[in-house]
Image (cartoon, rainbow over all chains, first blue to last red; front, side):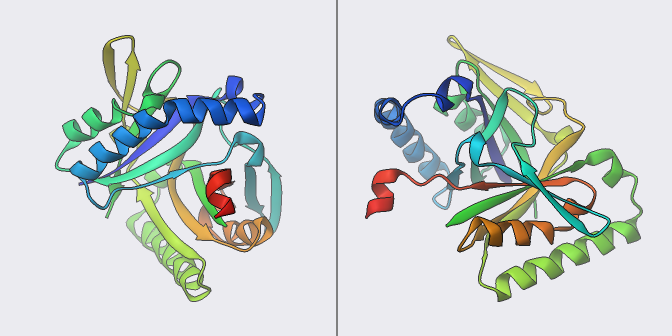
Length: 119
Length: 121
């Protein structure tokens, strides 16, 4: 079964940090992410993941009556924003839940939404 | 540069469509995906199951909290995405406008994050 693990987190404290601080925090957290990638790779050798750039980079595109309207995003009005996605092929939902709980962003203010991918 | 085009739409609207209307929507998605492939911009894409089938996982303290449903109740939910390789944001926005969901919902375009050190390689 294919599952998308959607990573939602409140990035409000993160976006205003200087780049140096972001780099330091990334470096500190990296071993946990590397461990996660290994675990995901064991569960699904073809796992793929993408991290999305910050909320200030988001644009929203709508087409109304044939006219294209582009506004600044993000789309969600919640404090949490989609920050990344893993696409996995796993035996069942329990395994998806186990792996989701290993994602560092599931802690503190974050949440991982698991959605089946339609074939 | 990779961009993710995230498709947000009202799930109730989809639920209300007839089989024929859904077949038309799928045909339009297939058509735009073929155009993206022909242009060499389509890296991937998926349709997600409804938020009714979502499970949300939170880790708080030492515990893992698992709940049925999406992380937040929103009227327009993420329903799918295209992953695009485009030369510019403008190109990505143009492709996004051709996604059928843009006509009633909204398509959010976000660059895929590239680590500054990797980008220099």
